[in-house]
Image (cartoon, rainbow, N blue to C red; front, side, top):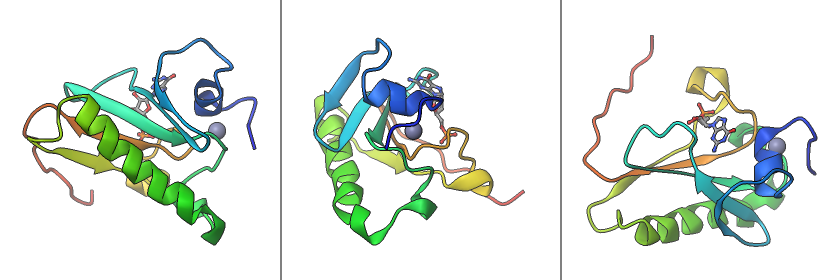
Length: 118
Ligand code: 5GP
Ligand code: ZN
């Protein structure tokens, strides 16, 4: 369930000191260490799952929880009214660098789209 060498397992399960913005039985949320927008929060499962591509049918409640917590965090961070972007990168072609599912909550201003295949 928790991988010793996974940074997001450690943060979400408070194995290292960090400032969790939110936690419940299934997920935790914390600020991205290298924010790309004024609001940049990561919402992650407490259990180790490498990517969305590795999620199973039994993770359906968890999948819903990630979105609902992102919605609530957007309200808490003051970016709900203007709007925000939720981003899930999946595996290398999706640009995923940390192999533990994480939803990015990006907000605090209007964002550009620059999505293309290279
Ligand atoms: P990815 O490219 O996998 O979608 O995004 C990984 C994100 O995790 C990046 O935005 C990066 O800044 C963030 N990140 C990587 N290591 C750490 C860490 O140790 N702590 C925190 N809070 N964020 C991290
Ligand atoms: Zn993990």
